Image (cartoon, rainbow, N blue to C red; front, side, top):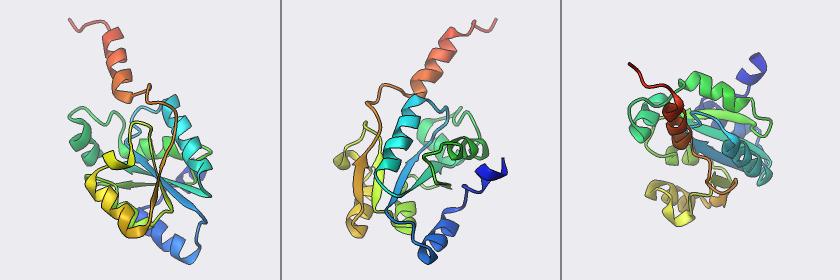
Length: 165
């Protein structure tokens, strides 16, 4: 467990670390990662191949609820951080509470911002697009086609359960 915890740090701590010891071509990926599936594994691996160091930023519990609604996240942030840290492709894991990852982009200043295949640079939140322009961050579309969705998995699991009586 301690090995995984060494990969988890507040974004401010990572920013300070990267200022004193630049990580090479830094890639930032972000998301909720509530119920991890094969699409996430492929996204992390593809994002990591785009650079030298991969940081994954997770929505904290409050921002996950705002983004996905009541009942989410299924797992608390502390557990989601450990699960994501277990991936070999992931070098560092952090978290954010804002509506978008733009403040984290501004703090960590990655060379690339990896987004899933359900995004295009022009469909990203306005705040993220502004951070990309301000800092010269390129967008890298990573992973396989979006045919794996946590929301769909949750719905399939719920539909397979016997109805409460």
